[in-house]
Length: 275
Image (cartoon, rainbow, N blue to C red; front, side, top):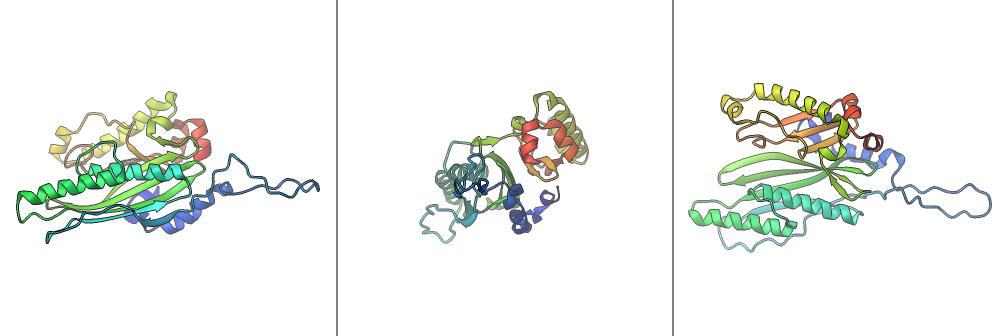
């Protein structure tokens, strides 16, 4: 899964989108009936989802008026598509990512999440005159899609309380047809969950051996994967755990399944439409 193995995934966006937009030749295509002289009207296939026509733009959020020398720096780039449900799903995930930067997990829209982030920054600045306002840059992409399945990647750069974080990535997968956010447990065949767990725990054990002593002591014995961030491309599926996510001071962990492993553990209908 080359497009996920480092931060160059965004540099590859242009070519990936061109490839994924084709969607196996199934998106946004109309079929014509045989020319029997009865009609030459185009027939729209109701089972074919419309082309997303992704447009990048700045998020429409209200930013606070700044009276201080150190003003909060917010830059949120989003995308707009022709799919109304997908647009709402994207915003909901963006809101959850903003909240994650300040350890919140509530049902908020993007504006509410930004307001909470600003409030946290203001509280930090109020503690000491030398404290600087928070900084957040968010960028949103669809690096891959296949039929009804859409992969969303959200990256953030932050500077909060004298700690700088660069290129922290979040992954989400949507089923446009079912209008549903998908987690790993949604796509893994129930009879293959033990096999999936074995793959995950083997990778986790190898990763754990490479961690510092303090991380090893505090890390869980088994890695829970059912609700983890996951992604897919033409080669298979994978799981993504961010730096500090498994345990404090832990390194990033990405688990990649081969195409054969992916076919083995996925539900048959999911695999058929995803690959």
